[in-house]
Amino acid sequence: MKKWNEVYKMLETGALDQKLELTGCRDLDVARKRTMHVLEEFKKCFGTEEELEIALCSAPGRTEISGNHTDHQHGHVLAAAVNLDFLACAAPNGTNTVRFQSEGWPMTTVDLSDMEPQENEKETTASLVRGVLAQMEKAGYQVGGCDIYAVSSVLPGSGLSSSAACEVLLGVIGNHLFCKDELDAVTIAKIGQKAENQYFGKPSGLMDQTASSVGDAVAIDFGDPSAPIVRPVTADLEGLGLALCIIDCGADHAALTGEYASIPQEMGKVAQFFGKEVLHDVREEEILALLPELRKAAGDRAVLRALHFYADDKRAVEEADALQRKDKETFLHLVKESGRSSWELLQNITPAGAVEAQDMAVALAATEIALKGKGACRVHGGGFAGTLQAFVPLEDVEEFKKNVETMIGEECCHILSIRPVGGIVLLLD
Image (cartoon, rainbow, N blue to C red; front, side, top):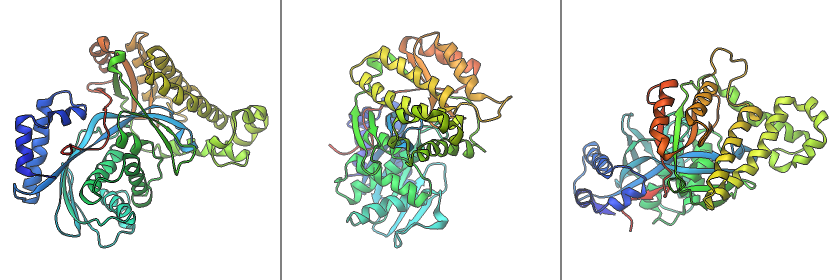
């Protein structure tokens, strides 16, 4: 670690520019000022001296590129880190208490004397702090109190998984302060998932945390969810002449819990027909051979959702391969197929029974019109509300943004890029 005043000087002289570039920042001057702001606010918030040794850490949001609702059935996914992140200054405080200040939110204070999940902390930042450090303690490391000041550019409700970015940030900080940087990126991702599952109280797969922690793109095989196979993929979108755009369709997630839950429930119902728990353990040929009986037992929508799983499970692998070999046309074709399958088979575009409000369907139609037959778009993440994903030719991106925002709403289109690194300590060589 380096002293606060040394780090501030490094920012002023540009000595940290190379590390800041790794985070995918588009404007180094803006990145320097943002980082200086974090340092200054850390000092104000915790009343620390300029000689204090600190860590600067960053963890990105993520985008799901392929494998829509395949992870919970132990399938394949393709995801990537993006250039929006949690950025934090942190330092040990010599106590047994963590003070976590996320800018714009109340201070979170966690007493580490009890590392078990706390019922009154469910669905709070405190549960993630306790959960992450508890996993490190269980792994044999001596953890302690620390002070953290963080800012986030990960858009809330955007499907970019700000929660996973926060978990990975805490993992990177804990790894640096207490674990001698011995934990690898996938281990940090697993720690974040356990904190979310066991302490925060939200069942989730490992895709979000892995994409945030590893960086660039990752192809993940969840065949054994306790030991997923993670394959790094180079996703040089700029080299392919493409920009990544995330479009907010303007719909509200409220009251959609049942819609989201119905997807794994119905896929599970199909698997149970064959005596299995997840579709990964059932061959597609078995489903097709017994289709009439299965339709009666599980219902038609469940069958269609199962067929989507098999198709998108294959596509996730094929898209990763296409990106790796820089095959632009195949990649875009597969993105379009994935989007169409989500709409027609998975049916996670419009909530059941919705007639007047079909925000995501309208946004998809408008996005396809704005693409003018070039690039590709698809639903992003869980569906029903939230965001879309579009891959847009670089030469058309400004016009695309203007047209989409005219049809859907001002500032709904966010131009992003894939970040080459995941969770990172900016002061490490």
